[in-house]
Length: 111
Length: 116
Image 1 (cartoon, rainbow over the protein chains, first blue to last red):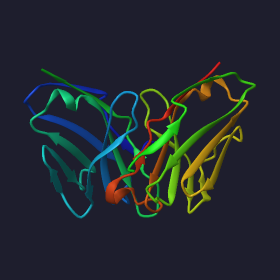
Image 2: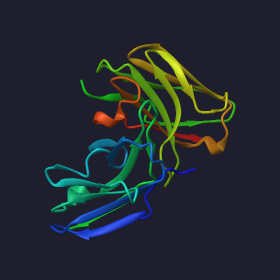
Image 3: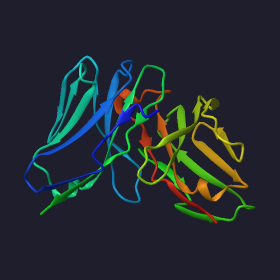
């Protein structure tokens, strides 16, 4: 039972443009949502999170949007840079429960 | 020190071997986790140690045996593995159990395990 889904396995964008990575979830008990970034041969690195009481959180070039009614969140990267090329995992957690991860989206930013 | 260190980075073992994966953190985190990740799949939780006690075992076969000798160390002992156990094994830690929401878990780089 995959409670967090990333339906796009890959995404390719041009440098300087916007990257939009999407994530859907099924468990309405989730109260925190996170994005992790993973380079080859490294572990996932925490990128940005959002609480279920918010609909937007911004950190520099990264913005996460949460639509609770649609059980959907997205990560916007503006402007995209070649160094952003990595696998991005969406994750969600409920109080006193472990995080659940999506399968990841491989982002390629072309110079 | 803000890292989780995993050794070895790569491991090839036969089905009759016994080996151990090691994980270390010095951030004072009191929760540590083992995850297994197969290609193009999400990380799957295997074990959770909370204040050095095993709090969750997600129905993992007994050929995987975790150990937490102290608050900084986490081991995963492997014995009689199968080829389908080949995967990336990730260790993670957090300040307290399941506080991933406030700042995420800190992951190690993983051990790439191949069972032959």
